[in-house]
Length: 245
Image (cartoon, rainbow, N blue to C red; front, side):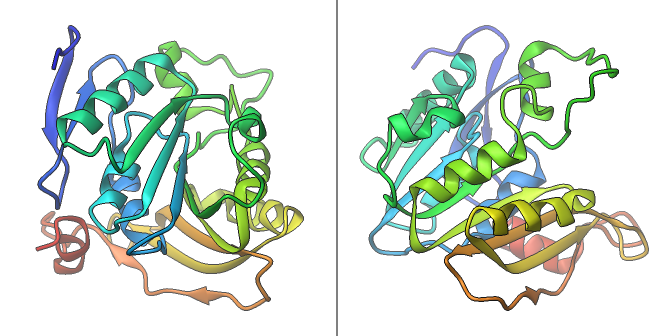
C-alpha cells in the first residue's frame, strides 16, 4: 500500500485498527471517535451510512462494534482515497465501502429508506458572506459549510433512513437549537443528547445528538462527559470511553 507524500499511519484510539492521515487535510479528533462510540447501531446485521466521512474515521470506529455493512460518503477525492486505503489496510473491504459523492446528491446513489443508522460529523461553522476563510481549501471544506449545510445533511439522512432508523451526529453545542429544529422539520425526532466538556467547570465544547426517523417525542439528556481532570490528566470516564481502558 502506497502512502502519498505528507501522509502517515496512526493507530485509532481504543482499537487495533490504523488510519491514514495527512498534514495537508483535517485529521480526526476526539469528536469523531466519540460519535463512533455514541451512535446506536445494529450489531449483527444491517446497513450503516456515514456522511461527510473524511478519511473514514467514524466508519472505522463503528466497524469495531458491528458486523453490519458500512457505506462512507465523502466529497473530497483526497480524503476518499485515504479512506479507501485505510479500509484495505485494516482488511475491512468486505464490510466498508467508501464513495466519493456529494451529500446533496445522495438520492442518486442510494434508495429511500435503505439504512438502519446514519452517522455524520459535518462541517461545524456556517459561512457568512462577510467572513474571509483563510484555511487551505481541504480544511475549509471540512470545517465550514461551503459544500453542504446542516439542512443538506439532515434532509439527505432522512431520505435514506428507514422508518425507525437513527441519525447520530456530533456538532457544536451552540447549534443545538438549530439542529433539533432541522431534525424535526425532516421527520427525525431528537431522542438522546450528550454534552462533552474539556473540564468540569467549563462550558461544553462537543455535542452528541441522536434522533429517530418517525420517532415519538421524548428526549433523554445523558450524563455529561468530562475529558480532563483539574491536573490535566484524562478523567477515568473519558479513558474508559475513548481508549476502551
